[in-house]
Image (tube, rainbow, N blue to C red; front, side, top):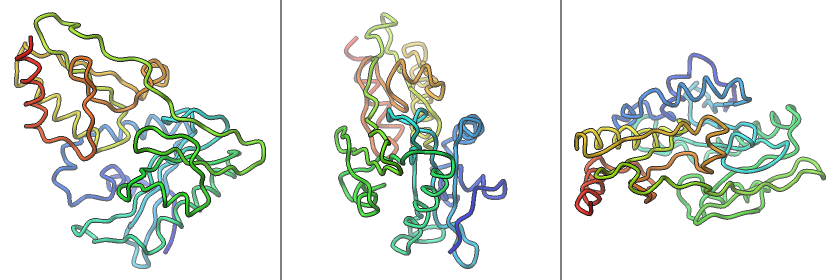
Length: 262
């Protein structure tokens, strides 16, 4: 295999998380692209894993910790590390060493950039970005938030442990009397979240002037710190928790339920 830095040739594939076969990914819009262009000047780094025949099988996306959802100092944060695991497209490429190679390359790059350590987030369950993957590579859990763990590997003895950023602010309840207010905190880095954003916007519009749709741009660091949240959907003051992208019909039902309570 070969690990390379992201080039212009592969950017369209990167924007859809290697899932160019997915019809659902087309719903994500250009949010990932606009986020990347903005974050490149902030220190965003992206590496790709190529097979012997040149097929892109995995990607790693990392950036200075202050632009992540963790608090830390002089660290880089692994925003996303992903090896294609679907039957569609190029097929399942997991368990072939791509993830380990990507992580090692990212760590070496972060060290060269002067970072004192690498932080990452992972789930307790063996699904998307499992925490155990990082723990097997020498990371230790240093914080938790629900089923998410914050993992950390120091590169120097004076590296300080990071911690998760916690929610600071919640949308105002009944901000628009007689109407339901949808608030979406959008960062743009995750196509899955962008899909939900686009679906929520369309769902809100289907109710006409009964629903107000508000967008909060959390790619702005000051705005993000004000809220303590990156990508979230709120219906009034209720945060709607989701893993895989919520279907449009589900969002419509949630809005309709709130409207009945007015």
